[in-house]
Each structure stands twice: as structure tokens, then as C-alpha cells.
Length: 290
Image (cartoon, rainbow, N blue to C red; front, side, top):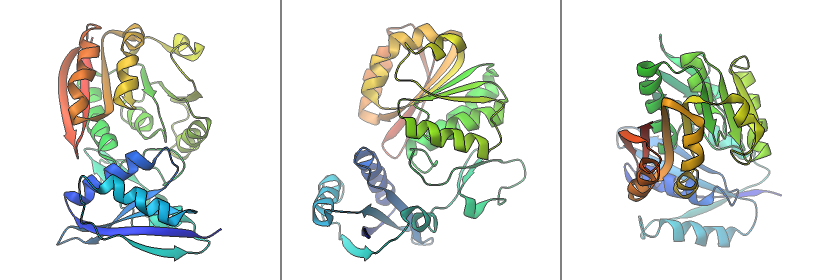
């Protein structure tokens, strides 16, 4: 079956916000979203959504998601028979530089600058290429926390592509447990761990919750990174407290700016204190300590 592409152009910062809204809203529906730079000087970007069926329904869904941000957006559609959307999106998927991290696809391998830590993550079935505001904020926070605190044992909860686990392992060279509730994500994580040559440091497991024995075997953690969503993060606060070492840090993301205070309150109630919040494209990453 051929694919169709629904696409539009926008300038920053609206382009980034539109991409983030679509990626977050369409992830569970399995609809790939890509962003590519059209004009660097004018900061014009093209955002694409790929559909394999129900083109009109998908177009209406895209318009609905964008309505609060861009009710006047001009959506275009085109047929892409037998296209490999991963290869297509990679053509415009530029590498991301966040602090010392250089997150790139195979098409930009070897282009890191001296002193950069290269992490290869190709667009695929699991969340996390570094382009989303939550992921880039987590990467920046990871560098801050690891450099300042030198943790010895880490957890990437909801690992997705394992980009964050790989960042911790490459920077700190410590054991990292990377878990996800989705078996496909775990498979992708293991592939990325091998690709980035950090299998000696990272253990990727499918684990639906803290009751899974893999957590008891690996705890306590000096550092936990959890880029999930606000509601599950709040529900996990008591269990998180039981798995974090005294003086340990947590980096929480997948949180909209308006959800920041409720999430922080859930962790303050478990004797965590707020250290710093980073803001990215309407999302936040929060650093807290026990």
C-alpha cells in the first residue's frame, strides 16, 4: 500500500511548536511526523505527517491538532507510492547538537566536532531522536547533572530509543538500566545500544512497572531519567522515591509547562526538592534531588 504525505510550511518558533504538538498527539496513533529545514536564513521549516490509509481523516486530525496554534495553516497532500518513510524523513532530519552531545542519523555519521559525544539514532519505531524538546532538554540536563554529581548507577525509565541511556553511558561510563513497557521499543533500544557500542554499560529490559524484579536487582539509583508523561510520572512518585538513593537525582520530562507544578508537588511530597527546570518549546525537564 502506498503512503500519503500531509505537509505544510511555517517559520520558527511556530514550526517547532507545531512539530511538537503533532508528534506528541500522533505517537499513539502510529503516524510518523518529520520536520525539515527549507530556508535557513528565513527559518522556514516543512512539517510532514505520513499516512497509509484514511487520508482525509488524517488530514482532519492534523488540522484539529493544529487549530489552537495555527487555525489558518495551509495543508497540502501528495501521494507517495511505496515510499519508505524512514528514508524519506532522514533526508531532512539534521543532526542535533545539545551541549557535548551530537545526536545524528547514519547519513551524518563522522561529522561530530572535536570533543563531542556522537550518538547515532536513526528515525524508527521508538520515540527519541533528539529533535523533540523533551529529549533535547533531557540531554542538556543529563550533561549538567552527570558532570556535577558523578553518579555511579542510573535508570532510564521509559527509554524508547535509549538515546538518553546512551548519553548517560557515553558521558559517565556507568551501569544504566534502560526500561520500557513496549517490547518493540526495547528491541530498538538494544539495537541502538549495540550500534553505539555501549552494550557493556546498558541493560535494556521490557518492564511494565517498578514491581518488575529487574528494578530490585539494580537499585538504588543515583540518577533516574524519566521522559514519559505528566500523569504517570505523578503516579510513580512514591515508587520512584523507594528506588532513588539518598542524595540521588531525578530528571523528569514529557511534561507540558502547565503541568510543571502538579508534577513537582507529587515529588516534593516524597521528600524531593527542586533544583532546576529547563523550558523547551512548551515542554519542561525538571531536575529534583532527594
